Image (cartoon, rainbow, N blue to C red):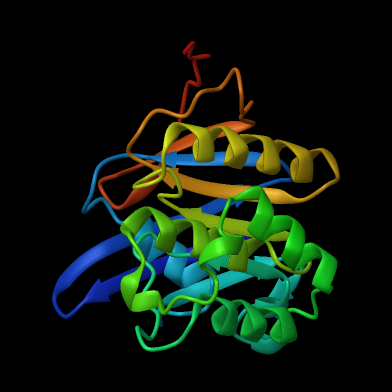
Length: 215
């Protein structure tokens, strides 16, 4: 489903990623590890937000050759979303709704699901970090995507919201959607079964053994 080949990424003289090939199929995949290992850089490459050497393909759609079509198949939620502070939550959601061609009932469901409906008329500058994260998740789940990329989705949200996120991911995965999730926190694999677990070690992506965790 997702294929990366001959990937090289540098910031100036600092090399962050350098590997020959990485492929993942349909399912839920966890990229674990601490800050500074290159997880966010990898996600920005896959989502088309950062230049790189190499090739990225999703379902045989090449990012460099068909960038618009490629990006339409991916939904990306950043670890620390940066939105204009002067706009309201509902205005941001309306933008994503129009861009992703999402129905109003989906917007209403997601805002209620993450308990954000009462805050949509507030300006984003007044949001707490937890509210900002939930807003970014709502935007990420609007519309249809083949691959959802969630960078550190568990940070700043409470336990109840984490449970809801697990359930939403599991439900969408059961319908054929795929997920690539990064987290330095442990993912509860009882509540969210994983297909594969990876780490970035010495600029390369390495598969690791996934053990079921209990809460």
